[in-house]
Image 1 (cartoon, rainbow, N blue to C red):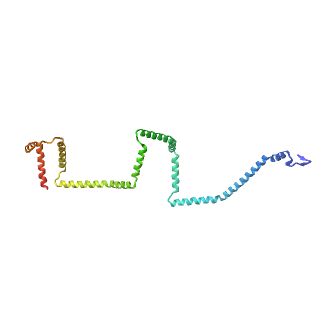
Image 2: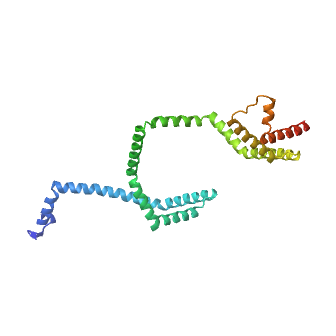
Image 3: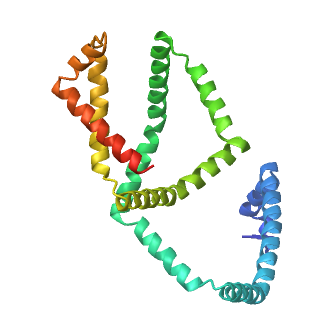
Length: 255
């Protein structure tokens, strides 16, 4: 298309006029303004990215140096990074095994049930408290007494006494053994002098039995010398009197 034989410019064409009209709209101008703002932001981001790419090799080298330094320090402290990484991988392998996953699922399920279990425990404690109160038992008083007892048991004086008691307890086997040795030595000396422990035990047992039986009987009636002589006719009294005479004989001999 031409005007007086000369070609039309794009602004004189119908499409160009529509474009100019569209560009003149406020909505189009606002869109172009936002686009230009975004272009500025993109340009800044590209500049930062370019700067980071230029610094990348130096930063990589710096991080490598830091890693090497940390490795050397760990090795100087006898810490094997390789061994720890191996252990970490082994732990990760165990944690991700089907058996461990199942156990963790059970643990999570139990954790979800904890609030209910705590509430049930609290209800049981309340019920026990009410039952104790109904029987006249004061839980608060007993807790107070237990606290006072714990306070006394943890007092420095009581700790010192308990330590002495424990020390005595550690020495007790030696004391018992020493006492047993003394008793054995005394018994051996007595036997060497003619003392029969079995005979002494039998006599002591007979004496105790006779004392108990005599206490249960009524006192014998002795009115004079003749009644005393009559009482001595009893065979049991005669054996006792004979034993007493023999004892007096040997007792006098050893005085």
